[in-house]
Length: 499
Ligand code: AMP
Image (cartoon, rainbow, N blue to C red; front, side, top):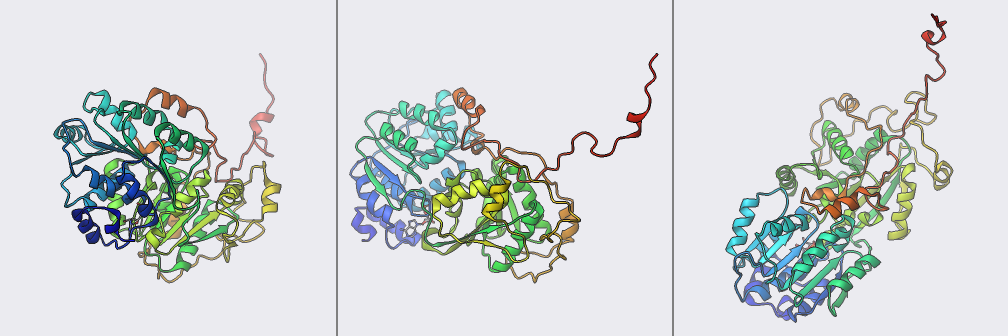
């Protein structure tokens, strides 16, 4: 099948040709005709399948006739993160370049005044994160009564991030007679329930089994026994062994660890930059540009920041931490192997990650190889089971029974990896890195939105949840000392004089 068989207009076909697509992907082939028919669509598709074009292309086709009125957008795309919103907006620019459609991107961290100006001119396509959209609605800058086409993208992530009440509120502001396209990488029962609420008689399309990973990604799990310094050593060895890392994304569960790993890689001569939800939007955008342009080879980030990133050249994904939420694994490794390209995904697993690792393996299937790394201590499931519930003590640096990666003489491998640049005394600088020894919350997936929150959403977030914001055991083993240990200071033994 070709794009011209899908019933798209010549201007759109020209833009598609200029972008370089020759054949529609399965989700495009299946979804586009139904969207053009005006049907609601429930799409279960992971990132990298061409899902974005499956709704942007028919939207451009449908919106090419008619005009938008001031403050009354004709269509709305809701996405969980700013990065994803910006990416969808870029898609509209590419595919709609011969179609003269007006669009506005309403995301947190950008100027209200510019967004209001655009809304006042009238927009055909509004791409928004829920918080900022509600903010503008409450300020009376936007009306949704004319929005007859709604897209909810990455619904599973909306749920994870606690955005569903905001989404429900937004949907209630739209006309009941509308077309709704609802996409999610996974179809958990809550997602299905939501889709039943928002959609009417939808065409269900599933392009791969829920929560499956792309076949073009070669995956490996590497077990490491040691502390976080060993883990960083192991990561560097892994990257050097790989040699030809064109560009790689490294995931940490915590923002603090994103910063530590980024600093560590830089002192060891790698070309790396950090990206997480606490950074100002301007520096997030700048870092992404540098990475996209190949000026930075490695992007160290959290799940929030990396959600939906579409950078076709990403050759490797490294999970520095096993994701706490197993479904994040699918999203993380979906950053590589995009649109049929080959990609590699490595996951470093420590003994304390046993439970999370088991969840990931249960989800993706047990045929992913689990290996050890030459020169580094590994661990077994039996050891992890025996260790369960016990807090691991940080191994004494000088007398650990088996030499760990850290204790071996520092390797000085040839700087063959394209991601490396000359280092300046990395071993010394590494020692100076701030080591985290306390328990830290994994990055809240909500932080993508410095976007406004509803009080209900804030209340909900304050409660611990099973999947997000959960306090996890520290990845750094602690070494608790109670009282004074074996040593009793002299002042305690001194006789007390009572008047
Ligand atoms: P998505 O799943 O929407 O994030 O898209 C993943 C990647 O596939 C993006 O880099 C798109 O530019 C690319 N893509 C989308 N549709 C096609 C197509 N028909 N042929 C080739 N690449 C495509």
